[in-house]
Each structure stands twice: as structure tokens, then as C-alpha cells.
Length: 79
Image 1 (cartoon, rainbow, N blue to C red):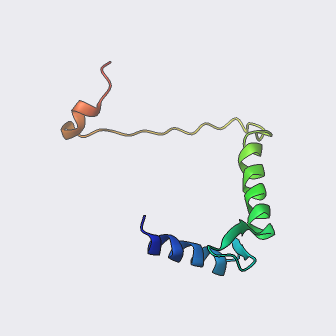
Image 2 (image 1 turned 180 degrees about the vertical axis):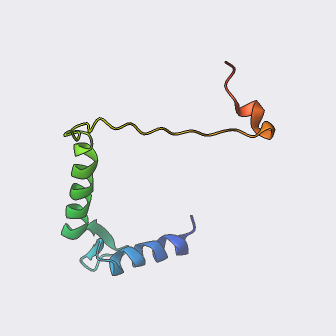
Image 3 (image 1 turned 90 degrees about the horizontal axis):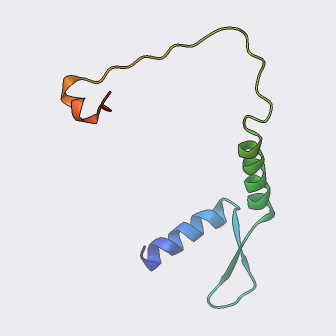
């Protein structure tokens, strides 16, 4: 990644309110904003809670089927 690409990415994150610059130091010191931390925590809670409370089974089944064309035979697992 080039220096200019990194600066552009940081600039976009600052504009989105996810990163802020602290003080007037050179080079600038960047840190996560409280908005970014809250967003990260919310997403982590979502991922960690996945499957913690599975829905009650309704008694219904779902069937999924697929086929591999003959050109894809090398990808098939030997049976």
C-alpha cells in the first residue's frame, strides 16, 4: 500500500467519524472514536450471540439440492 493510499484511507475514516486525530503532532496521532468503539462492540455482540438462543423448531424441513456439470467433475469428492 502506498503512502498516498494510506493517507486517503485515513482521510475517509476521519470523514466517517471512525478515526480522529489527537493533538497537532507530526506525524499525526490517530485513534478510534467512541462511535467506532461502540460500533465494533455492537457487531461483536451480534456475532457472539449468534446461535445462543436458537429458535424453536417448527417441525418443517428445508431441502437443498445442487448439481455439478460434467466439466466440474474433477471438483467432485470421490465417493
